[in-house]
Structure formats: structure tokens, C-alpha cells
Length: 531
Image (spheres, one colour):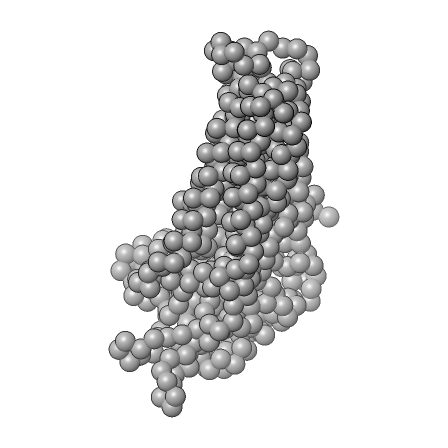
């Protein structure tokens, strides 16, 4: 059977396969002119919180109950007995600058001529990066299908001159479809009519949804009705191991590269060996395939390199994949006995690829939708984890009785370990003095609570283990190596490597589980959002 030629053809085929039904409600809006697109208008003064729109959306699109393309958030204001209850029914905002589209590594999102942000299911690998990138948490992972899915504004119904299912189902008429002039919206109206309580900054993606809001008493605080609920985010274990192991590998390769360079410059240091190359290759060879376990459709993992233009995930996959291939080639040169100058020429682009790959890896997480991740310290931590690679090379040197090179290597190793300690201390200070005036205070303060209340013991274990295995034991190993006690030094460094790796894995687990995303306030019935 031939594949559908357009996204709408694809959707119509899926609708026929799943038995979705269409209503006969005609739409009464003008045709689109150049520079215009369709959008939702939500009247918060009319919504009664009945969730009929959620049910209608699921029925129309054949989704199970846990997959919600439209969700109703609940907020409250005032104090008993003078209280106010507010609801926000939100689906995709069909943004002018959609973060899901820009970040998708497989180009599975397209913005149709009518402005709808459409997800091409056939191309999706289920990496779920769009679920992180979207500040509204609109895309949802469909575990059974292994892909992400989202609202498409019932594009087939619009093409037929009918209103979307949510519009048809709303008994209060709180949801409508409108036409918006994009330039006029951005210039004059978005900052006034595109905002609602506890929604992200409109500047992030330029959403098109227009809100009609009730009048609130001046100075009255609107609170999410679910603010008392605080749960850890998904641990993302495949990514925990992948990121730590690739950072270890690149760190070790940098150590190897500078060892080769210093040897060629005439310093009385032995050249790196084949065993060192194999040692730094091993973590990347293990870590990169592990990342496929995070995907809903791992067989299509190679297509993650498709969107090099705008996706940091594509750039990371391409750079680290090329890096691992380059280290493999280098191992072959060592095996063939290639001269040191030739090896160095090959090592230069490999080192550049590795460093860029870790930078791109950190930028995957530097996204406005996840405030706890969107800090410079994320990039610094990812590079700082490279001290594990230095320790790895040090173990090989100790086993090879290369004490002079070992002692030279331990200075930068200890510096990187101390830098990691400082970054953790910086995080403690950041949350300790978190300013309530910070526009992201709600999310960041909840991350602080997770770190202190839910994972306080693990956080302390992380600090103590880092101090012991990244600083204390390596310093003790230096003493034994200087005294010529090679076996003892190698044993201490091996223990330090294992303990420091466990410490970094623990730290990376905390990194994932304590993030609190932006999103829909009061979203009790989040469905399959992974947090």
C-alpha cells in the first residue's frame, strides 16, 4: 500500500482505521488571508470545568483515556467564604515559533499553511524531546504506539468546513476557532490577550490562543489547585547512563590527546597506549546504544540525526556518533603502529567532535520549559563529569607502571573533581537564596523541595561520595604512586573511579527526577505526561 502524500491524508487514513466519527457542525469564520492562521479562543468566564472537551477530543481521535490532547486545569483564588474557581481548557496553542518543531530531531512536526502545528506520526521515533521542549506540555507520549501524539485542531474537520470536536462538545461555548493575523498578534495583542494565570511567558513560543479572563480583585493571588501535589519526575535511566558514560569517554580522550601532544613537544613523558584508547572508547561504546532504550521506536534511532539545522539532539547524536567512530579508527592506528604525529592529526578532529558533542548534549537541557535545567551550571556539570575519564586513564597508567605520566595527570583530575564539588555547592546556594520575585519561583521552589524533602539523604550522599572518591582517594593514590607503591595506587584509583562513577550516576538521577516543568496549572488529570 502506498504511503499518504500529505499529513491530512495520513490523518484521514488513521481516522478510518480507528473508526473515528465526525460531527456536522459548520464553521463560520472567514477564509485565511496571507499572514493569517487559525487559533483557539478560550473564554475562562464561561468554562464550568465539565471536561466534556477532553472526552470529545479522545472520542474523536480514538485516544485511550490516559492520552489527553486537551486538558482542563483548575485554579482558585480568594479565601473562604469569598472564593473564586477558575478553569483553563488547553490543547495545542499552534504557536508561531513552536519549540516542539524546532527541537524535533526527526522533523516530525510541520506547520501547515493554515497555521496548525501538525505531528507526522510516521516519522516519530518516540524520543519525547518535544514533551520537554514544549512549555505547555502539549505533546504526550503514546506508550502503546511508541510515539508522541498531539492536537491537530481536527484539521480534517476544518478542511470540511466543520468545527473541532472540543468546540462542538463545549456546553458553555467557551472554546471557539478564530482567524488571527500573526504579525498584528505578536506586535499588539499577544502580551495582553495571549496570557492566563500560571501560563509560561508568551515570548518562548509565541502561542496564538486568545483568552477572555474574569476580573480578579486587585492583588489577589491565583493558585493552582494541585499545588499541594509534588511528585518526582521520570528518572530517565537510559539517559542517566548514556550522558555520564559519554562524558567520561570524552574526558578521557581529552586527557589522552594532551598526553600525545606533550609527548610530541618533547616532554619526558611516554606516549599514550592502545589500552588507553580502548579504555576511553568503552564508555562511549556502551553509553551511546543505551540511549536507544529511551526511544519508543528504537529501530529508527539513526533518523535522530535528521534535523541538524535546529535540533540540539540531532547535533549531539551526529557529533558523538562521529566521535565514537573516530576513536575506533584511532585504535586501529595504534594497533598498526602509526607514528605519533599522524595519530595527533587524527586526534584533533576527534577531540573537537567529542567536546562539541558534550556541549550539544548540555544544550538539549538548556530549555526554558524546564527552569531547573536551563542554567549555565548544566553545561559546566556535563563537562565537569569528564574527570571520570581522567580517572579512567589514570587507572590504566597505574596498571602500566607509568608513574611520571600518572602524577602529571592527577593535577587536572583533582581540579575537575573540585570543580564538580563547587557546582553542587553553587546549586545549594542558588536554591537557598531563591528570590520570590523570580518569575520562575513556583517551579524552582518545587525543585528545591524535591531536593531537600524527597531526596535530602541522597543529595547528602552525593556530596559525601564525591568528596571521598573524586578528591580524597585520588590524593591518597598520588602519595602511594610517588612512593613507588604502584599496586596500591592502582587499587585506590580503581576504587575512586567506581565510587566517583556511582556518585555521578546518582547526581544525574537527581538532575532528572527533581526538575519541575512549566505547564498547565491545576492539571490533575495530566494523563500520560511523564512527571
